[in-house]
Length: 161
Image (tube, rainbow, N blue to C red; front, side, top):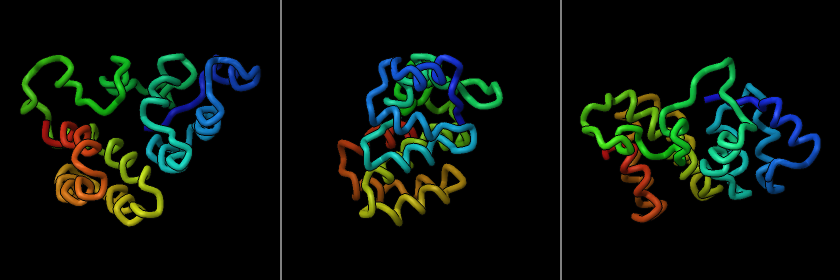
């Protein structure tokens, strides 16, 4: 998803207020309406920027989807954007289509592999070239092995939960 700075975000950047840390400010500048969320997360992974940081900026009204698009349900609920929407509403997980599972899991997988730096470069490229749920599911064991069981859990939930 592509995000742009809101008017409040522009003012916060200009006036240096709005509760942005210096690392968040660096990421915030990259949201130009052209770069995707995964591109910004990949570019700022070395600084420790996560999906939670972006969700905070959205919740503060500093970022909005480009072109007036609506936020994914997990983002609307103020969540970290990694939990599938159905999981939070308590409905049956099997109702999610493979396309929805892909949409839920892709940003999680991208952020995980980008956070690995050069060590995860090839895996990150493989994730970014994944174009379907099946492609991501095939990469899941490699990601699990690379990041460990505990860090893999959000991706497992997004893909299979």
